[in-house]
Amino acid sequence: MNLAPALRAALVTAAIAGAAVLGTQVAQADGPVTAGTTAGTPAAPQTTPAPSSSTDTNPWD
Image 1 (tube, rainbow, N blue to C red):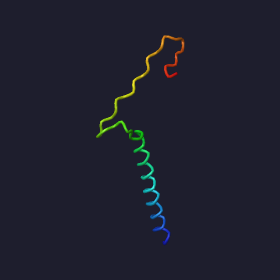
Image 2: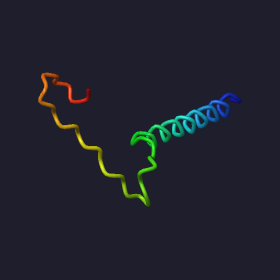
Image 3: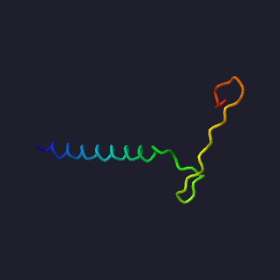
């Protein structure tokens, strides 16, 4: 029965490592903090470019 404590330790280690990875993913889900924020106030959102009168239908060009 010396195997049970080793398996328990391996399970706890895997659970802690999994929680750390998941916590990192959750923290990065909103994207990195930008320099445009001050004291928790987000910077103004970027505006969408206005469509041009040309035949080019891609507004991001």
